[in-house]
Length: 131
Image (cartoon, rainbow, N blue to C red; front, side, top):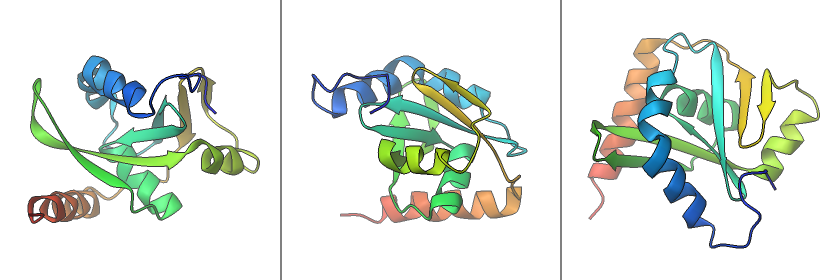
């Protein structure tokens, strides 16, 4: 389990708190070059947003992508999530660029903005087409 939540509260509370208090700042720190994958701990999961979410989904093949809307940001925000167990297993063979309580940073692969934008549009469209 990551250090962000002791597991004493429902799993959705830490994520809701993260989104409500830090989402705008997280979006501002995203790097369009894809040099880093930034992960934020909430409960038993790690969450990446926007460009980091794209890289995380490519790296782990995760289909756990969520489209978020937030009152301070007018555009859809994509979030990809992986379990703490998955990240810990990855960390056995890879070095984290930064590792502090509730935050991990991996060295990214670099991204093609064209592919990122296509992925972003496709994920938003999947969400928009739900009943």
